[in-house]
Amino acid sequence: MFNYLIGKITEINESDITFEVGNVGYQVISSTNTINELNNKEHCTIYIYHHVREDIQLLFGFSSKDEKKVFLLLSSVNGIGVKTAINVLSALGYNQVLNSIAIADVTSFQRVSGIGKKIAERIVLELKDKVKSIGLSNEVLESISPPSVADSSLGVFEEAISALIGLGFSQSEARQKVKEIKAQLPENAKIEEIIIKALQS
Image (cartoon, rainbow, N blue to C red):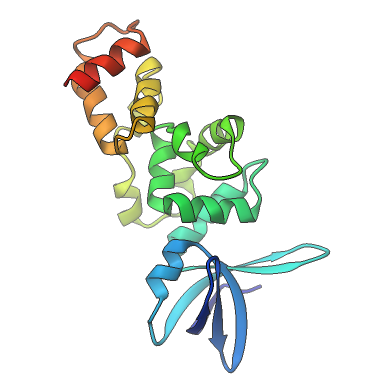
């Protein structure tokens, strides 16, 4: 079983790289983040997941242990294969994946090709309690949205955050606006009221 490879990138394609180790070139499927991170480095380390099936063997490579752990977390969800998991990482980046899970931002996952609403909801529901148990570095854990626990019980306010993100706000902007106006609205406020109030602010 591969854990990591040390060598250099000799060829880059849209979704994979050729990683040379000891005069052998390995085809490694990688996220956009990893390709950008390792590009032009003379020698580097790439963390490997070796995917084996009866009919195929694939190598997936990551620039950090944390990205590899998030990939494995995503691919553990029913309906998410390894290729969809790598597509999610390319589209969102692993930090945004973690934050989207923390604040139950289903909309972000729906922007990824091949992921509909049901699978996006499944990602959030199945992974929200697993994120902090997969051994992420302290740096990454600290970057995950602090109000993740509180947001999980926001109900309609949580939906408003996702709606604002869908309107073009960043996650942090949407979250901040909803936090600012939450005290001004009753708990049974309708999502339309929250969005209008947020846009006015």
